Image 1 (cartoon, helix red, strand yellow):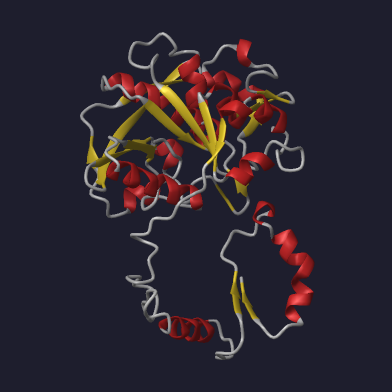
Image 2: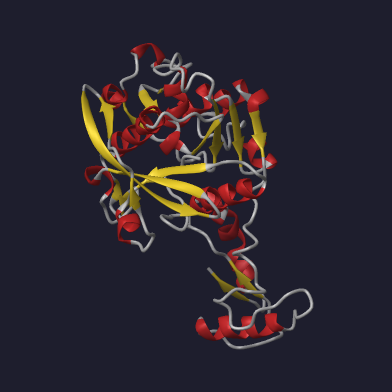
Length: 328
């Protein structure tokens, strides 16, 4: 399982929740699974009991090589989570950028990350049936396995699954960054990773993975249309036979109101009256009038276009004419 963020170690959104929870579910099903993710500052400063692997990685990047440490910790009953440490790339306050915008070297940061995964497998003489990649930050791994490592005995039989969590984020960079990948220019074309003269990481993941999936059946259909495909609808239609929609699940061990330490009155299906106490507490904490008879609506989300707030905006004035309370 390869992801640029994994809860509880690093998180900006739902990707981290899935990357942290899905391995736990797979472990319960008897699958042997491990996780690979960057060692950001928040990981190094967290209380995770990190241990150091006995050898460093030497990762090709353009015409040079960059060294990286590999740290690890255990989650679940026995899942090893490996952290790629290179402070030049990952010792930063935020994962992908600041309020001023994305980090200018994000192409190099995640090319390095993608190349480190097969190098890690080779260095430690490992073999995996499947490498499951998540979003654009990991999308070059399937490209590498089908090109530079296609004849490698440790990797040639490894299948790839690529999950698209949000097609609005594609990892599009200048073609001047292509040399960093170490790939041949013969894949820089519309049937490869080229996208209007630029590199598109996500497009590479879609074209080179064995199987693609996304977060619901409906979303799998939507992203194959010009309206919701963000320019990759044709690419996805080309791979429609290998594209599946699997609805995101929930970690019920964590998101369970019966034992949630953060709500004022835990409840289950037999004690639903305690939900009233939770509503009152929420109303007070947000400075709203404490009323049992008013509907309380909540939206918990990033204020991004893909989250549907354009639809909320269209009906917000009519909503506010009603006798209700709304927390965003």
